Image: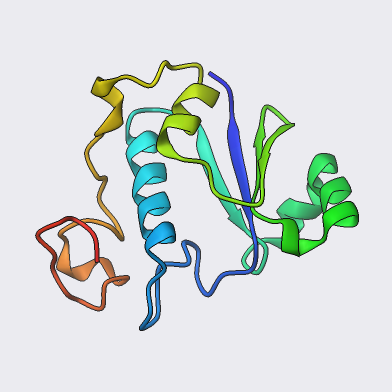
Length: 135
């Protein structure tokens, strides 16, 4: 299965889903990544503030940053090839990158545990539970 790597700009935490004002796009993206990982899809995200060495270790990322700067992030690579820049991929796009046809069966994968779940102790939602599954 292809490896999907998303290189993100500096975020306040691993997911960017923290603090008093949540970015709904990051909440959705975090839930999508968690759900796909639960399905066995090889998708990883790397935060510039949290792991700058990972950025330096990938030649395609170094070249991208030299040309576009961190303002061009996020950057999505599939098996080392650039497939998307400037925004996070959707769940359907990541399924396609993984070689799976986005279908209705995959469109609504369950939310995985962690930040966007109903677990009150997840830490990202300020200890609040949500009936929708996200903060």
